[in-house]
Amino acid sequence: MILTGKEIKNRIGRDILIEPYSDERLNPNSYNLRLHNELLRYSSLPLDMKKPNQAENLSIPDSGLLLEPGVLYLGRTLEYTETHNLVPMLEGRSSIGRLGMYVHVTAGFGDVGFKGYWTLEISVIHPLYIYPNVEICQIFYHTVEGEITEYKSGKYQGNKGIQISMLYKDFENGKY
View 1 (cartoon, rainbow, N blue to C red):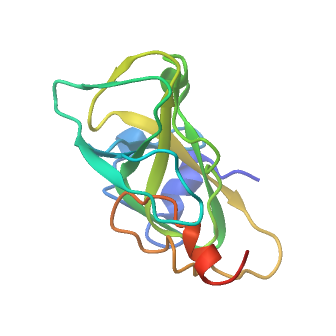
View 2 (view 1 turned 45 degrees about the vertical axis):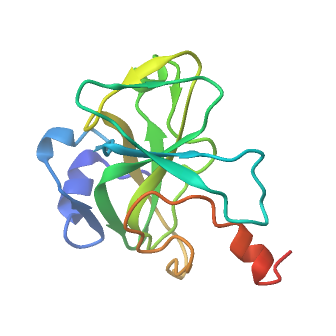
């Protein structure tokens, strides 16, 4: 079951933390999150799953930044979120999708107990100007059945900003 907007608001400060929060971004069954003014772009290709890949910082000025097709940009939400006893999910807003912009390649599914900023995997179909603080995606919440074990990953939990892939840590720890 997905929480209604009214239930999301009821759970703010208990199961859900969104900072900063504004009723203006609350929808019937989701909450709009905004794009921070920083991006990362991988600076050395090809990428390698077994290694930390280098990325360069980009800043989105108020006048806009042109994104190019065929490039993966990593962004983040302006809002910090924490979710307990629920599964958070992230989707791009339809207005963003109608411009040919993908907000996440595969990582729209969150874990119970996640704390941090959402890293966005942004790509565009054709050149597109973007702007800071735009409502880029929406978070919604599923209820959970069964005993809960909260997310405790050392890779992404409690992040302070945009994060490159840390899959290389699984190789270092002998998982693969």
